[in-house]
Image (cartoon, rainbow, N blue to C red):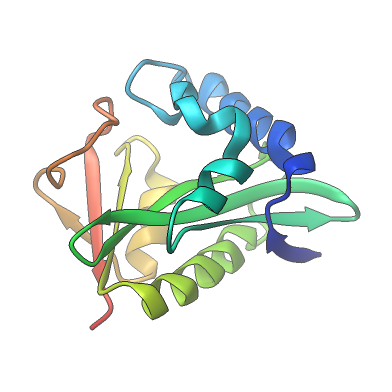
Length: 156
């Protein structure tokens, strides 16, 4: 198993993982990552964005998940697109991806923000385990209007 930076050859695999995960839970809705315009080419999106990165988790030569960090505003980044194939869940891989993303974020930002759905209770518990605090409302500038849970982690 390796965690590495995304390459162009990973774009379709990650797009499929993200869209399959959302669709299987009935979240293939406007206002979710399912319709993000950069989803078809995450490699170019993250490469063109300063202080941003996306990592994939590869197991036996197959991409099974990923996570990204990108700037939000005023010293805050956003944890983005943390997804795993359904078959890869429950093995601690999300923990490894979180550690990778947050280590990077802590060197570039003062805080990390994320948006999710309360219904994704396993994900919410993961974020709280890593020290994220649930907010009452989204930070200004949110584009994922379908989200109903917003978290913030302060590094400094």
